[in-house]
Figure 1 (cartoon, rainbow, N blue to C red):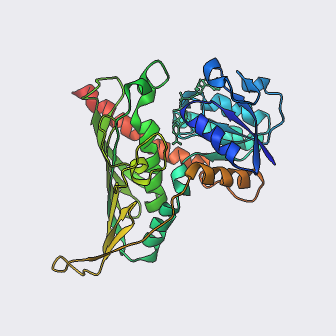
Figure 2 (cartoon, rainbow, N blue to C red):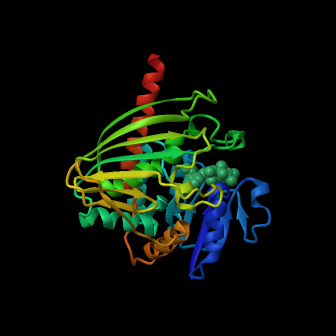
Figure 3 (cartoon, rainbow, N blue to C red):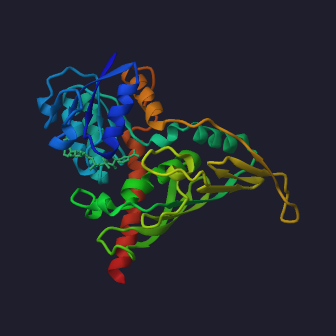
Amino acid sequence: MTRLVVIGAGLIGARHIATVRANPECRLVAVVEPDGDRAARLGVPVYSRIEDVREAADGAIVASPTPMHPDHVRAAAALGWAVLIEKPAAASLGEAEALIATLQAARVPALVGYHRRHHRSVAVLRDILASGRIGRPVLASLIWAVKKPDAYFQGNWRSGGGGSPVMINLVHDIDLMRHLFGEVVEVAALGGAPVRGAARMESGAVALSFAGGVSATIAFADTTPGPWGFEAGTGENPNIARSGQDMLWIAGTAGAVSFPSLTVWTGASDWSQAPECQRESAPDTDPLAAQLRHFLDVIAGRADPLVDVEDARRTLAVALRIEADVARARAAA
Ligand SMILES: NC(=O)c1ccc[n+]([C@@H]2O[C@H](COP(=O)([O-])OP(=O)(O)OC[C@H]3O[C@@H](n4cnc5c(N)ncnc54)[C@H](O)[C@@H]3O)[C@@H](O)[C@H]2O)c1
């Protein structure tokens, strides 16, 4: 029975707590949460500081605000706990590099919470690309369009720049694309805050170039109740309504595929022929449950982390390039 602590019982921390409780292979031994309202009625010992936790544990899920991750990972590693760190692991490249050094020195394994990689439908998409059915991928286009409620930004760490959808949400899309296409070699981005007018970005467009030759775009906004986005398309998040609509389109030298419907277009040799389409399928996944099972394997030494901090650092580097591009353009305007 693996003993776990959850650090931060907010939006995602509450879901981790429920996920840990639903898995018979592990036990929630404590929660670290300084907010009394959130700490109430959890049914396990709750502490304000990691250093005060008295229960023995094997691992911790770090679900506190991103700027606190470095301190919290250091404290957990000092206690010898393996860590599952919510994305984007850290807020800067320097912090991510320091985290890598801390974890190596403490000899504790660390997994970063890019949970989309645990979806069966993502594995099927990767299999379609690897099979060569659509030839060599050359372009991809992704849309992430949601409307976040105003309360999401009020009176918390997301009210300033920390609430940028690039650092909170687009990092998932960047990680997904890196998982599918390999490393990003060029980034260009535009963006702004035309609706709420806050200091943080709220919508924009990104162009990415991958080492393998794929060119991709991401259009994103957290100000529109659109049906297109990973969470809406897959129905993975109980807080985001399911639309079942596609949100990622990939074209290759011999065909195309869209996701999450896994609609594959093949059979046309050039523009004179109409491609035929087929649907593949994949069962729905509870990605946090699948990620937790993987974390338990990592703690037990049965698996290497699917996403380690170095991997997450590369996604963070792309996200920070997008933030910097947009900040430069807005300063010049
Ligand atoms: N994987 C995902 O899909 C996903 C979804 C949402 C958030 N996240 C990530 O999870 C992290 C938390 O985001 P959130 O939206 O849940 O934020 P949140 O504000 O809802 O929750 C953070 C919690 O941490 C608590 N906290 C504050 N100081 C603390 C401390 N010193 N020790 C322990 N807990 C403390 C807060 O009281 C709050 O309850 C962020 O890094 C975010 O990017 C990931």
